Length: 191
Image 1 (cartoon, rainbow, N blue to C red):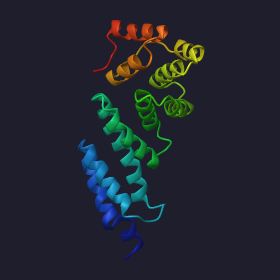
Image 2 (image 1 turned 120 degrees about the horizontal axis):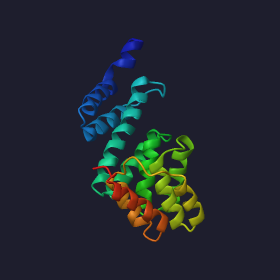
Image 3 (image 1 turned 30 degrees about the vertical axis):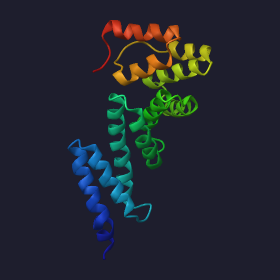
Image 4 (image 1 turned 180 degrees about the vertical axis):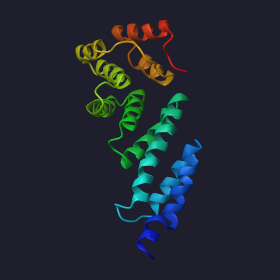
């Protein structure tokens, strides 16, 4: 078998191609399954098919995790996102969603760790700041939570899953309640 056949041929490539077809069609569950099957074929770490399969497996998990959150299914979202972080541990969208899920499930330490990692990469990520403020308040660091919240400006949209998590996490955080009320009053929540 030639070098190119080893790289672009074989079972891993067939699974990867089928995964990309499903991914591009928005069938993220099927795509994730195919990318995982490509990864299970093994090979050298530098294999581009395996690298792309890891990347798109994580991207598929982001879509599936967000859909689970939209259904208020944190139990379903958690293992998906944690597994995907094994493939792509520095992925900010994955870290953010995993942080939201951890907060919703009451694992505030893990949530803070994930959200702080997001903000180290993307300091202006407003949704991560909101959840981290609620988490810090819930952990007793109210002054720090108020400082984080005070640096935000209302604007943009908040997805329904985020509103649900924030409302559950910080009902006794007056600044957060006021901030969320401003969003509701202005109609700036996303559908």
